[in-house]
Amino acid sequence: MSERTIAFQTLGCKVNHYETEAMWQLFKNEGYDRVDFSQNADVFVINTCTVTNTGDKKSRQVIRRAIRNNPDAVVAVTGCYAQTAPKDIMAIPGVDIVIGTEDRDKLIGYVNQYHEERQPINGVKNIMKKRTYEEMDVPYFTDRTRATLKIQEGCNNFCTFCIIPWARGLMRSRDPEKVVEQAQQLVDQGYKEIVLTGIHTGGYGEDLKDYNLAQLLRDLEEVDGLNRLRISSIEASQLTDEVIDVINDSNKIVRHLHIPIQSGSDTVLKRMRRKYTMEFFESRIIKLKEIMPNVAITSDVIVGFPGETEEEFKETYDFIKKHHFSELHVFPYSIRTGTPAARMTDQIDEQTKSDRVHQLIELSNSLAQSYADQFKDDVLEIIPEEEKDGKLIGHADNYMKVEVEGDVSLTGELVKVKVTEPGYPVSKGEIVKVLEKPMVKAYAYLERTMH
Image: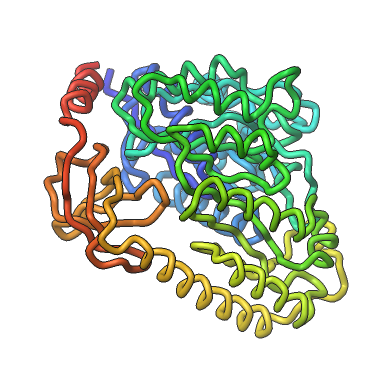
């Protein structure tokens, strides 16, 4: 019998990418070969995103393209859009299987069932009833030098602009022993950095008894051979004094935190139903900068939220400037059908949104440049992730991107580099020292390819 093939297409966030890798492990164990999405495969899996109406639209386009190009293949749709709109997806002619953001381990069974019965399968269940974390192990990543490790699922916040609790359900934390076990497994595969991720990562432990995020960070500190630990995103309200103390004591947590602000105006935050005030947010930044001078603080901002006045926007602009954020992801508010904000009457016109986005992007670019300038002639440690035009590019612990001339064999290793030309989005540097020979990596690679 010839090898069965599978192709994946992932839309959306880091969590989706993690879950695609987990699904791939399941199919790999059943003897499938993974091919590129543009090729002809026996099974196509589209892992969808629903964070915006555009996310839905993009997901539909990818689904239709897969069906059009491969009429004989089994087409399975999963992820957030599948969870919130299974009927809409089932209505697309050619979709064979729909599962949401749970029961991904049943996908192979569904594929086999479809082969036998040739009847479309809707495996989406009510996510709001789910109270336990679905274990999905990823021992290594097909295309990454930094490993992501998913530690929690769901969110209890119900911000007025966000559909995600309906797509992912309520907060569920992964068993701490499983997290530490997988972290060790990833390090043993040769990964030097682990990025903790989730739908509401900093909320880890809120549903556990006598265990919290600070405790998890302490336990991960003990993982043998781990060089760097990064939290993909954490809310200001979750940066408790205890968490900040753990960061202060840690030798592994990097000097970079992504803290979504969304708006720098208390009145807008209230309409968004965010759980902090600007005074509190400011207290967290000040405390972080005390324990970690030169910490990089990156953030997400939504501009043009319904009712946002020029004054409210200025509050946001001034706050970001005052506290020298090192980089922003700026989004114009976009209506997400089904959320309270979509029903608000004082929507902002597109031109105003666009002007405000440009102002903040300009600010972000100049703040990012001045952040990088502080490191001229300093030595940073980077982990090269990609090779481009003969140059290696990687992130330093403070999330600065640095390119150097070096051999491609250094990919995934820890390399000390001197910053010669600070810049944004990429600084230039030169290699000072390689911290460890790539033996482990080569061995892990051989192990993988032999199986």
